Length: 242
Image (tube, rainbow, N blue to C red; front, side):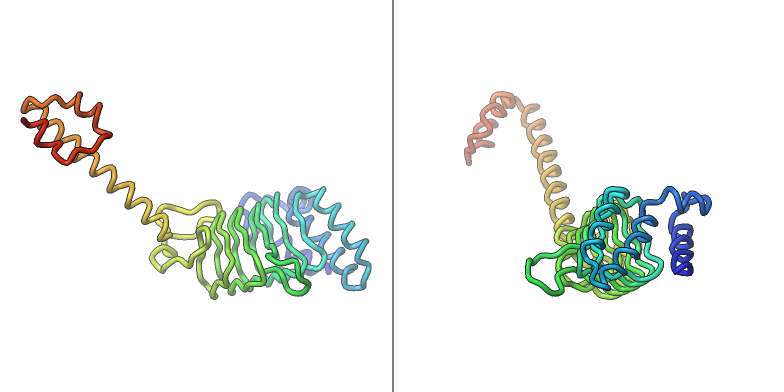
């Protein structure tokens, strides 16, 4: 038990440069408190003292803002950064050296009994606000981008981002993982398509404006035509030149 607690403290220092000393970690880190109390509630859950286990989990949520069901299985050196709004469901399974940021949900998509929540492999990092839903597997070393919604398995070492989450290509992963947001250089195909359409629209508008300026120099009444331009006329250019 004491060895596991020491590992938890060491994991805070390893993953949060803001941590300054042991007293600060033990007294001021809600993720550490949630993990400590979950050990207690999980032990009670396994010996069938389920009401007491749930009550301790309830008090833990009130104290830390982190809700971990006592039935959830959590590995060693688990770290929750900031922590507010984290929800971990009953049948969730979390490996060693996993990091969650605030607002993460490991949730279910079914009311049926049995395995309903995700399984996270060793070394997984889940960005702020991400939702991982259903009895899916997140492979070892995978990274889930901020605010992603993951409903399918993610392979080992992959980086997933977006809604719904997509696996990013190697060029995007090389730019680095951002736990708090998705950068413009990450290769979300939907975002790229929208940006492309917007860019094309701006280019077309500029070209039309240049054409109108040149026609105005030729004596066309551009202001009048602009006022009525919502009515499409196929002979528009011929009319304003004449």
